[in-house]
Length: 443
Image (tube, rainbow, N blue to C red):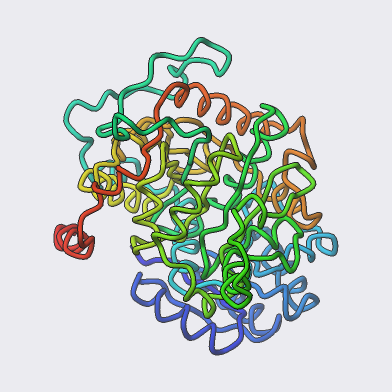
């Protein structure tokens, strides 16, 4: 069955990069320079499954093209390139489509996965195709998330980690949580921000939110925190002045939600000072100042992430119910087995009920979901437009209720679990490249 085409209204350089990735996936990319171009394509009878519109550079043209997508009984979804501050100017959305949003900077590869995920959801990919991705690991119990205890229930005794801290190492005060998926565009930053806000505002916890993505991270812009003092900046200042080293708690800035926010670097070109072991040690030291440290990670297996994985007591893996994301989660499960991190993993089904059934996602990935977060893209964009969390903007919304369930279950599942500590760093193998090569060779 031929795949639908994708209309792309992006600057030529960006269009060419995205087109190459779509060509690899078997999708036809159609260049659109104006509303007239799009109208001609639509009238030609071409099967257009999605349009990528640049709201940031040409708001009026994007709005005109968006209208064409819904003209004459059409209901074609759009992937909109728009900064958070544009939300107040635009009133889009239809009950019959699910539009999505992204921001610059972005990678053409991550955008390709977003596009493919939206098209797969639109085509209602068969469950049989999904279940053939990978068998569930032996012994995996096919249990629904509804079988998990209520957040208010007495938590079950936690399972012991594969390896804990050295016997003479005192337990750390704070818990380190990583939000990670090797695929971009699955909601890692949205979940990190709003989980932190829930723990701070609803659970009376002291929370530090760290943007560890020095390439495409956008926690600060989503929270309206401009020109933050970064960890790289603070360390460079200390090196230049010869003054005392500041701790993370002294460098971090406090958001209106009460969450402390730290950005590692403002540019991927200024990260030389961020030696992975030094960053991990600073995060470990910060546990004395916070109850929870949430690390929003870049989707890679590089040295920085390896060192931070060693500190994590839980690795939360957001999984959207579509084939590419499920495949990425299966890959990470295999990586985690090799790294000795499997017992710390939990998946979060994000944009639940928008594709593959949640029970099937759990069975294929082979890990039980800690929570399901329903789709609420417009609310999250609105919150980012105001520089706030969804917890502040719409505290009574259902999706905030989902996030509160996640916070409660996280606290219940981790209570009494000792921190991994620096001793866990010995789990990390010398090289991850050979492991990834073996996984790739299985495909």
